[in-house]
Image 1 (cartoon, rainbow, N blue to C red):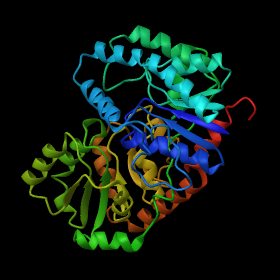
Image 2 (cartoon, helix red, strand yellow; image 1 turned 60 degrees about the vertical axis):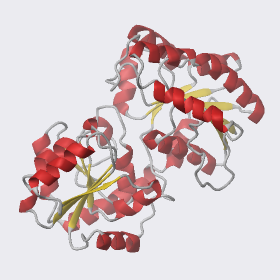
Image 3 (tube, rainbow, N blue to C red; image 1 turned 120 degrees about the horizontal axis):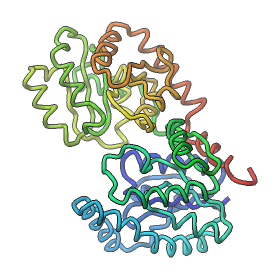
Image 4 (spheres, one colour; image 1 turned 90 degrees about the vertical axis):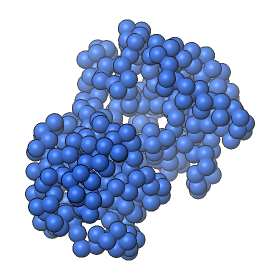
Amino acid sequence: MNILFHHRTRGKGAEGVHIMGVTNGLRSLGHSVHILSLPGADPESGSASSGGTQHENTAVPQQKGMLVRWLLDLTRYVPEAVFELFELAYNLPAVLRLRRAVKCHNINTIYERYSLFMFATVWWARRKNIPVIIEINDSCLVHRVRPLFFRALARKIEGWVFRNATGLVFISGHFQQVAKDGYRSIAPSVISPNGADLNQFVIDEQAAKQLREKLNIDDKVVLGYVGAFVHWHGIDWFVDLIADKIKHYPDLVLLLVGDGVSFEPIKQRIEQAGITSQIILTGRVAHQEIATYIGAMDYGILPDSNDYGSPMKLFEFMAMAKGMVIPDFSPVTEVVKDNETGWLFPANDRNACIARVLQLVADKEQQRRVGTNARHYIEQHRQWKHNAEQLLGLLPDA
């Protein structure tokens, strides 16, 4: 089957990992997948891949990609109403690009990562009798970091898309229920949380040991965080609360990997508390090194999430045989069994989070057992090929 994966994102970070995860999952099942990205936003470009990389933007002039990136950066600073008008206007070039890509690659199925105000794909695919499956990671029905200006219009368009697509892929059961409650009738759907690529997250105990020795933490219990240093992940309040307690646990070290707007305030809090030897800030590290850093940890922490999303880092930690302390939002409990594949604490209960982390410091056997169980869960249920199998089940002839 020839599948076109269309997205309107920057193709970076977690969204880029997800796009490539689903793409490689489909390819592992024997399908040909072509990615249609904004010029300069192809998650495949510049990355090593095997098995014949196929993407739509190889012929795009570099100047055009730079222009698009400049326009994307500009949207960060324009008023919300103007930003949303840009999103709405993109439907016109999207139709032209879809037509060209479908004809060029003889596409017979379209898979799209949903974006607000984006209706052209479903509208055009229905006219051409091409099945179109929409992956839902965002919605005007859920809390968003950037609030909507044209909310009523966004909801009207979204309801039409959700009803008229061939099928919908939701990242959590809660998200699916929100859509059903909000729009009454929606297309057939499946729940497909994130996954992990076991070819990228390979357990290398020797490399992990070398990193621990390099960081002078080989004899410590290492609690790790990997991700953006932003408020909604809660790493700022987590460090603030644990800073005054960690001195009482001399065997515990926090290894915090990443960067973001909260980085400097966190750094200042660590220095103020005099605990720079127990909380290590690595800053941003290369993506290909992330597995080694996770491998050097004994267990992980994600202080906060939300009630509809599927945290990517949870699956990557589990793939590396590391259990994670994580809030019990419903998308998390769909994946994690407490004390079996991770450790749950009541969402938004910050003191419970700190207590759960500290309870585990001395229990190395439990750290290993839960980590092993987590890896087994990924192997059996949440590799990207499992996501691909689920979405293909929405096709009429499946």
